[in-house]
Image (tube, rainbow, N blue to C red):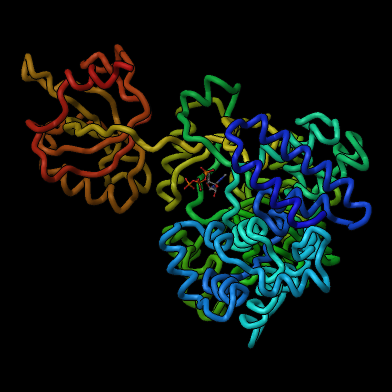
Length: 584
Ligand SMILES: Nc1ncnc2c1ncn2[C@@H]1O[C@H](COP(=O)(O)OP(=O)(O)OP(=O)(O)O)[C@@H](O)[C@H]1O
């Protein structure tokens, strides 16, 4: 297929406002590409990607590494001796869009010459889609000293043969700014229409491969059976399943029980490992036995040697596992998220960075184990498979709940137990909890309702502390489980609304005990009354009516956020506000 034909279609798509018509244009483009591809192999794959502004599949971390200035330089050179890269940049400032700028130059001088030698019948430079693709792949591979010059040369060679419309879409493709209104769903629907296969099956194959080109070819050549037979491949990343915000109440209402895990405060990773070595088609070089990908399928292996070492020591079978990499201090305790960012994606001085901040992986899901894809298996079973994989090589065999690198998972329908898990997560320095549907499948790239991160508190309340309990065991000398009250403005009384025990670290318990002990008014066994003096800021999930507390309301899942040293009991929340907040 001539690149001019592609550019014509791209222009028509860009001018089309209606989504359905756009799908139809893309369908026609794929059909044309499919015909042309007999003469020029790969045309279908290339066009399925180009139309979305992609040169390589989404799973491939290869980048063209062409900065805007390289592109301006190449355009300037093709535009003639009296045009400089600065002129191109100035024109961009006026017109605001690189495609428009590229289309505004006349590359005719050299084009005439090319038309003579390599050109097509229509007087253009005769560029084909495949030539553009191959040149861009060469350009991506240019490395080391002189590589920027080589990139400019190669790009100049392409612009030099472009008509105005071709230049418009070449410039946009090269700078990842295609923006003609073709989203992933458009290409999915167009593949289904062009090759007469169901959209859902195309969708599944796309989730598994992250390669529109490959899926278009399979749909054309093997139809539905071919699409359904597409498997995950170790070394080809998958989009990560994502979470929605949610509450414990919702989770327990919708599912019989919830799988509860700590929410580790790090960066998402997907680990691919094959002890016999990974085979991948990526142009980015040797894959070795282990690859690590970010949430966006970027290859971050080189930045995280601890994860590679973990895989080598732990995994005896091929696997794709999903987890989080967390920064840890010398004692192995988690450090804040900002610390992991110092390591993630780092390309230089990794060994030095590792000395400053160490990282440790924790895995919570398993997509593939030993030749078997597990996307369709229930979450609880996937977690069991993960445990088998990770425990196999650990010295003393599987010790439930204590496998190095395995997330802890509790199955429960008991809100109090979930509260306790949340408290422990926070106390251990983690972000909170994740609630997952134990029966759910793994949906790559989806922010579905089967994974919920506990919703951050929308509103907080400033409540007076009116009571507490002495702790037990190692906490016997600390006050804990604080009773919270609000003001009834009509009567002037304080009315209880709940008790908070969650969200408080041991260090904070000691501080709170020092702060509250002078105000203890009365002791009755473990329970103490506290004279109104101290105000806590608390988060909560919901306000319910309740006979348990004197206000007539109860806070669901209250959590301690801090002491409002700046507030007196007279400034605390009123019963009236509580009633207002309760209304939907
Ligand atoms: N046990 C766990 N299960 C799933 N995800 C976890 C877990 N622990 C930590 N995480 C992290 O929490 C994220 C889930 O939230 P979400 O899918 O909304 O991602 P996000 O947009 O990066 O949000 P956030 O900034 O809250 O991490 C995951 O992407 C992962 O990085």
